Image 1 (cartoon, rainbow, N blue to C red):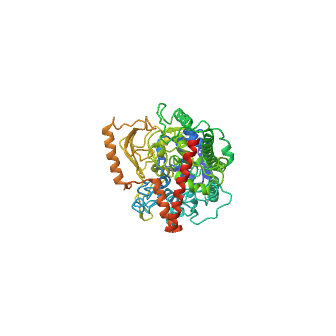
Image 2: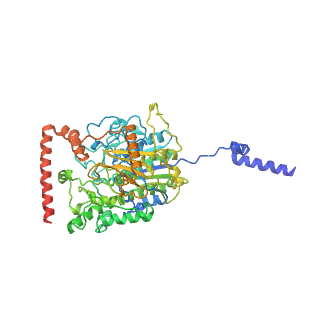
Image 3: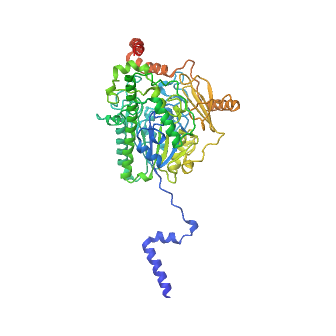
Length: 604
């Protein structure tokens, strides 16, 4: 009797302590117990602009990026991750998971041939039959925000409020000045298009792009914190898009760092990337044909060129500093440990020397040594420094070589993920949307969303390789195609078929084994003729299935930018006669400037 009374008393005490629900749970059979799903993580996507593969410290660079390096130590680095070779096609795929030829961004608007613009896949704006990952997350209870570069469509139906973002402050174009936000960086548009929550905003007088974007990102996070909802925050930096600009304090840290020149830097980065395990230790590397001889420069020219790279490094470090402020905010609010970070660059580094815009730049910017990096000054790194940013790869932005389309990718903070590991398998920007949806425990809706038909993402979730980086998410016999502005590629297993137009390429197909030769130094088309022919057939099938249009005869992307500038800006702004006269004067002056430069070089 005493034992029974004691048992009854213990049961009654437990009932009072746990409540009826607790007692019922104890009483339920174990087979009926439901596991509690883990909390859905916050998600932060950080997009750098025009960074090379080894610009991040964790990828072999000498630039100080401690906060991105912290994310790398806390997660997985992807050494074989690919994007498009220019901004809007990549950003459109990043948001939708759909190939750029299917989501409306078959080419960058500024370089799109007139015969292509408006045709299916070439609207230069997100099409109605794609949904962004932000829309899907928003519909499932995430609070969503975007700040920075948007560049996927300025029409009212394509601005962030209509594309799944609760809050937004974006620049809708390819870029702007980083100190003066309303100042164009090239004369191909009448103005810079800024929007806050879909409306023209009041821009601050004190402005530096990376700082302002993180200020806004933190502001939006604070405003929604009381809701208790997980968040999706997208930050699209302008660093390091031209004009390359940075606060002086960051520039001063790199004084003298690049006095050895671009070839020395390229070799150092290749060695460090191999040491880190990002490329094979014996991977060969070529000197690009667009790289000048450092030894042939005068001491004055070397000093000027070194300053260009000092400013470039400073801009990258300044961006990393702002990433650190965002991380510190999340640590202070207790959100950091439940936040997944995704970092990538939208394409490879800028390889143009902007020679065609030289006269316009002379009228609108200073390029004096002592002013470089500051307000009113313009830095273009140029193709020789770009070769170092892309090291150990070849090629750069706009081209299908690895230097143009292989981007540093870090995914950090996912539950159960490996730490400080490298995944070497082939991955692509279309894989990001499936990854984020799986992290958020959210299935893709398939062919419809809110009553409209959808293009379905074709990428693969990266969660399996976050847990085990030795896995591969694509079978060796699965082809993955690519095209932009007539530069083409097809990946299959470790092989890559690629064709680049001049000046980087010669318009001929080539074949490389990226596992042993990521620098694309040894053409295998003669040694592997059957694979070479099979991959060409795979590319033709992919191009037809995705509506890829061939570029017109004689197409040149630089000349196309000039044509589109005249048609879309100069003629509407000034009229036919004035535009023709003005452009004629500009062309004549450009010739005179070019001749004067050549004369000075001969005298030097």
